[in-house]
Amino acid sequence: MNWYGIKSIYKFEMARTRRTLFQSIVSPVISTSLYFVVFGAAIGSRITEIDGVSYGSFIVPGLIMLSLLTESISNASFGIYFPRFSGTIYELLSAPVSVVEIVIGYVGAAATKSIILGGIILATANLFVDIQILHPYWMLLFLFLTAITFSLFGFILGVWADNWEKLAIVPTLVITPLTFLGGSFYSISMLPPVWQTITLFNPVVYLISGFRWSFYENADVSLALSLAMTGGFLVACILAVWWIFKTGYRLRI
Amino acid sequence: MPGDASVIRVNNLCKTYPDGFEALKRINLDISEGEIFALLGPNGAGKTTLINIICGIVNASSGDVAVNGFDSVREFRQTRSLIGLVPQELTTETFESVWDTVAFSRGLFGKAPDPGHLEKVLKSLSLWDKKDNVIMSLSGGMKRRVLIAKALSHEPRILFLDEPTAGVDVELRQDMWEIVRELRKSGVTIILTTHYIEEAEQMADRIGVINHGEIILVQEKKQLMRELGKKQLILDLDAPLAAIPKELSTRNLEIGANDKELIYSYDTQAENTGITTLLGELREAGINFHDVKTTQSSLEEIFVDLVKRIK
Image (cartoon, rainbow over all chains, first blue to last red):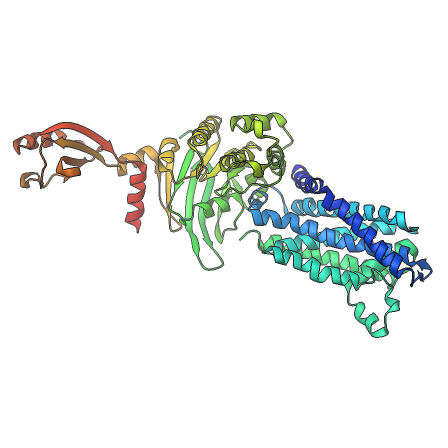
């Protein structure tokens, strides 16, 4: 293993976060606070509890997931897309680093950033509402799995995109709507039966459900199904990345 | 040449791009250890594609490349760790400092941090006082130096310089060639492409000419200059000459500027250059001259002539 290579990529990517500290940390804190003001205070006054949990506390796992998904994708996709855009990818392709090492470097850094962000959102949320974490290990497992899976997805997106618009279109038009419609701010049991069935086709439902279960033991779907869906998506992303490097898709012509 | 062992062996290398363009056609090439090899060719000839395949940036369609005996695809770790590349385009990071980007390159190539080596490299490229500067604040010439520093950061044994002096000032060019000379002294093999053929003429041990994806020739520079270079004797005439006299028509003569120059081209390799006889014949023909000079064709003229011939 080229450990120095992995460390270099990882450090390089993490340095970008330090340079954009305001955007990376302050802006999610502000967004989270706004969500609590809008959803917690405004809607929370009408929906006091869901499954025995106060509305403000209920939305915390969904909020963390929302940021985790979007940040994992945008960090990892930007990390690999920018060298392609600027041409500095030549160095990565000509270096003695393997596919696994490149992915560990980029995806590891993107996942680290979103996990840190998740922690910041959790801490911010704690200022507004009482939070219980009944199963902290499961919570961490879902946090790690989701961050890694969606960072891998972001990496794939960054390789696939050949312009800035494509890079932005998936997080904006696919991931954010799926997260909002995936039970971030409500329990899917609150929906009419037809919409409940339709919602089950949304993969984000399983992530949020499993994650929320680790907090309050409340879930829309079973824990095993949540875990299986998250693991399945992770395997699919790993296979896609393996294929990208095997064929050189959009990296090596 | 410093060594005879091939450090790079290119075997039947072909590259056809997805749009059907055949960039390389069965290239065979051996680069010896420690030599400076200049790869010349017009734009689109296939120079950069060849370099990119050797470095691992582009996949070959067929054929193979061995670097120091290792296969460049199966044993990429061994081959790539030996190679440093200075690309043609000014592709640098934007927001990082000079020091960070050079340290990144060293780590990426699997080398342990060595601030002393990086300091030496940056100083040799006059970048030491810019080490904390953000790259986007540097001039084009400085960015070119950064690219060279990145390539040298991991102490490569083989250095590819793809048009390294394009768009750089005279000072940097001189600095750069000085570095190349130093690297060569330490046994580094250097492969360069350049449009400034006089640079290749000054620096290279061997010349390879590539055109339309084919290697036209590979030869030692001195031999190439001897074999393909013309030498000319130029006589400044006392009086203009309208036409070459009949009795001299078999000689390889032509009339030069303002009809006041007579140019005689001859083969330096021939046993007899024919100069003595020619001078006698000129005297007999009543053609007088007041000055004599000789010129030898440059590598550039040889290169242009070669490419024209192939066309």
